[in-house]
Amino acid sequence: MTKTFSLSKLFAGLATGLALTAATVAASAPEAVSAEIKVGEINSYSALPAFTEPYRMGWQLAVEEINAAGGIKGDDLVVISKDDGGKPGGAISAANELVSRDGVVLLTGGFFSNLGLAISDFAKQKKVFYLAGEPLTDAITWSQGNKYTFRLRPSNYMQAAMLAEEAAKLPAKRWATIAPNYEYGQSAVAIFKQLLQKARPDVEFVTEQWPPQGKIDAGAVSQAIAAAKPEAILNVTFGADLVQLVREGTTRGLFKDVSVVSFLTGEPEYLDPMKAEAPVGWIVTGYPWYAIETPAHDAFVKAYQAKFDDYPRLGSVVGYAEMMTIAAILKKAETTEVDDLVAAAEGIKVDTPFGPIEMRAIDHQSTLGAFVGTTAVKDGKGVMENFSYRDGADYLPSDEEVKTLRPQD
Image (cartoon, rainbow, N blue to C red; front, side, top):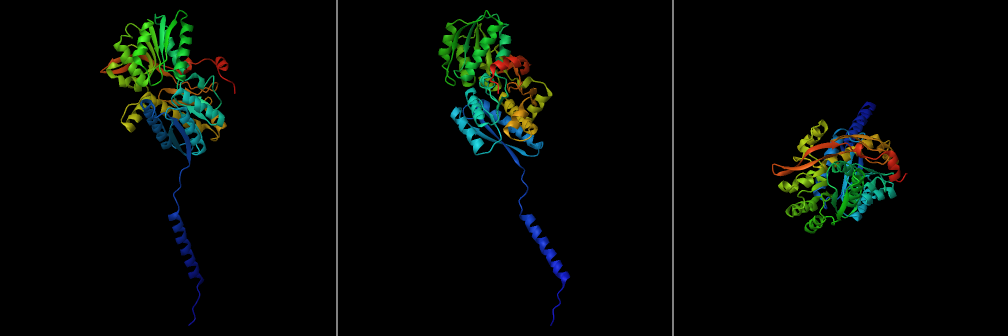
């Protein structure tokens, strides 16, 4: 019996087979994955959790908001975070791993000033963009400043200028200082003395105490300060050292009839642990989150509390603003090459919970400001009162002055 060959049936069979093959391929193909832009973040999480844990929560909130709004030109922003253990060697090891192994396009973070300087030098040597969030030493943008390093927080100079402005109004002429004996404390004391004596040539500094960071002998320090009979004290200690100093100094009557001006003490991470033992009447920089009434800050606090069921600390604002600044730079830059990132960062304007800031091209310092006020105890806990926000742009030297302070690229 003869079989008839049908072209129509052949074509129909081929069409069916191709359709089935296409369907199989489509079913087995992986879903499209969004591209990622990776940034490296380094901080002293294990060494100072009171500040760095809220800081991490702040940048996590920012990353979530950035990616929900479309990421970086459609790509997801991914943060690879490492703990430096509070040691320069740990910071450099982390930076090396992030750049050479993890393939990040830039570095950010840092807490202690000496570690920030170490990462900044790494950035200079390796030609990697670095945005320092917290390190406050003036050297990071001036004497040791470099093309690749930028800084977010108001520097020692800026905060000292804000505090010296208030200190100059005090009748006190005899001053003592207490500061941790490393880059941050040394830098803060030096610039405060310079600025106060410029405003008040009649002021003299009668004693300086330099306890090791994290290991203060508060009794001995209080005794040495009291022996010099100062009329005012500049304090630069923070964290556990601050708690011990306040407790021991109060017990010994060190602060009785003595004015105190203090860096950072009004920040919740340092003020809150003292509760009702918090000092009263100190002139401080800080963050009275509970009493700031601006739309930008209200939106930040609402989002932060919704995500973490907790109130923000100053570290939260630093982490959030740090990552928002990075996102703005990445969106503006033509590529993720370091020279394009530097060009994008110079002069960039960014919205933060404290209002708009600018990253100055002349020295890579942002104009983020700080709140200055006095400490008080209310409902059994320390608070800031009589405070006002000081715009960082008003407390920075002119471009001509910066040229004498910073190596020119």
